[in-house]
Length: 68
Image 1 (cartoon, one colour):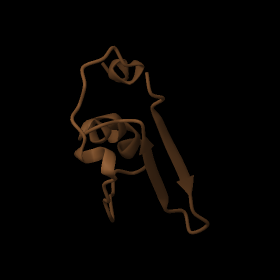
Image 2 (cartoon, rainbow, N blue to C red):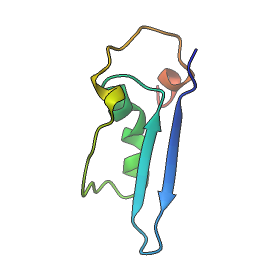
Image 3 (tube, helix red, strand yellow):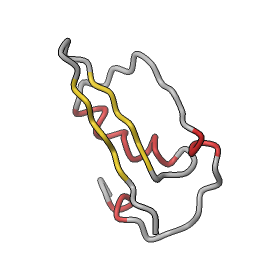
Image 4 (cartoon, one colour):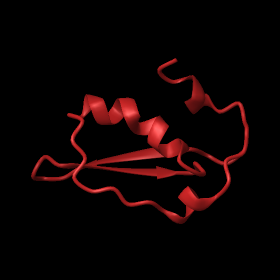
């Protein structure tokens, strides 16, 4: 099983960047939804990675249980 990670970087100006690794498809958007809300909910830019275009496999991911 591939490691799923969310990297949070807080810039000196207070802006925040999230980078999701090891998650295929649009699942990354679901995983970061609550975190984005907690950080203020405002998205200035959104950029996908090549993983976004990969098919999503069904798994018992620890991430799936967050917020549910």
